[in-house]
Image (tube, rainbow, N blue to C red; front, side, top):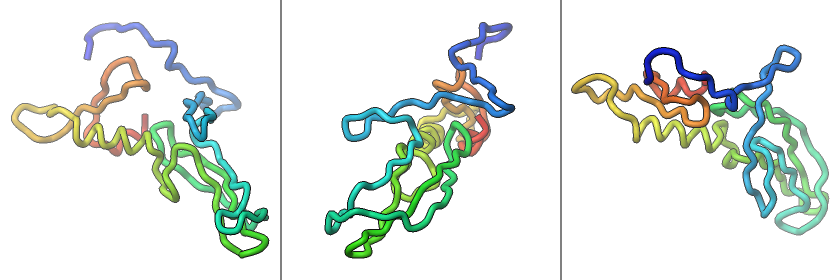
Length: 148
């Protein structure tokens, strides 16, 4: 890490609106369209019979990411003909997982690509915070990524 004063990377700044931190999320390509990360996509028709779907139950999913814990309102859907259940898809979250893909990638980078922070030990102490800060940060374990 550089010593002394270093200039602030103003492109990493976050806005505050009504006491809450607002951050622009990256766009992810989904079916030839770019959508913001953590966007909820509802199914259009039944995957079995092709009939229309009707909403069955609404619920909130909480996704852990390096952007914080994200609340995603989602819906269970039911087919009007065959009765098959469907669920909304959240961009950047595989299936019914509680962790986003980008969080898992950063956690793996910390765990498997980390460097020793102490001489002659196997303790990984450096984490890669590219895109979050201008320089590499230091932390004792991958779980601290949620605090960034």
